[in-house]
Image (cartoon, rainbow, N blue to C red):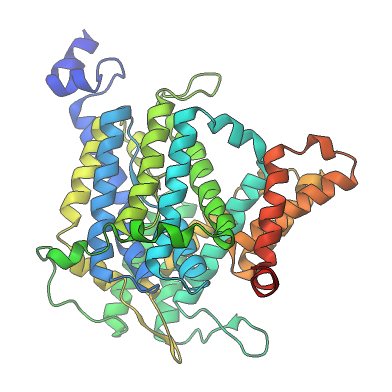
Length: 462
């Protein structure tokens, strides 16, 4: 009787998304989709703020961020029938902006071409069934360390956005002037986000951003927008497709480690997210297998390539989808609701521009202090994975340390991973375990050696 009433609550939709089998209904799925959107919509403000600093047009990134999230989230709902939502990955966008584009002085089109390539590689691996082989090749502790290192990198970017951390001629990096307006509103938002997170209150990141934004308006740090909504024009889609004309520029030895770093971060984060969110949704069996995982990974991998194509960095599955699951969402209809709300967001670029507004945070340096809470919070969340690293084993502890320290201290994701890979292989050889090193790890050694010696090779060999 209960199943019948559940099925009747949605008609065709209920049958299409299997409401009866998963014991849910239309209202529950709709609320779940809304909850997921409200929890993850901060990316609409943060992504254009970050990528615009790398030379991309703010309005175009804002519109395309919403559009890419809408397309991929709706595709996830229709093809996998799971309540997972996707959007530009916070962290991956910082890597693309500050490491690939600004750090290597490349055009943004080349940076996005790297994203397209890593998405296509991931898609091919899923299609041919090599996902498990890739997962086995890289030791778990190293995969975790990469996430932690990137988390510290993101947190550092966030602190610099508000002028809390600045360049120091004597030490390279130092504490900024915390009495300035940008630093104060950034700190306020960070503390509010952390306070709410400590009480397990949903939307802590979004509320932290809102706090910084409101205080910025009150203090005159941020300028009030002249309108709330606007109709998109042709220029708002100007970033779509440009990356494909620069694939050749991205296919260089110097960028291979970077593309691999993007692939590692994107591919394995998705696996963890799907298991973490899918478990309470009843989509994971006792052996840890996720229902419909192939379609989930196909959509996620294609989404990464689509994100590069749209010029909005890699689009990936969001752990914030757990907010919708917590509200009872169990099917892909929740994803359709979330995707539909992202479509509506396309018309509110002025609000996104307000939050992502750049101001002078210290002399001659500009940042977006209102987005600092999101970046620092993500760094904190990724840092919590540290206990999962096997610190008692030298062959995992040493490379993990090299990765975690190397990524933020060099401000280079690829360099940090390279330190870890080389450290792992050397440690395994010294400990007499060379035969236990996966062939893929051996294959990475010459790639990273070429990466570290790129300048010398360019001058003396090529």
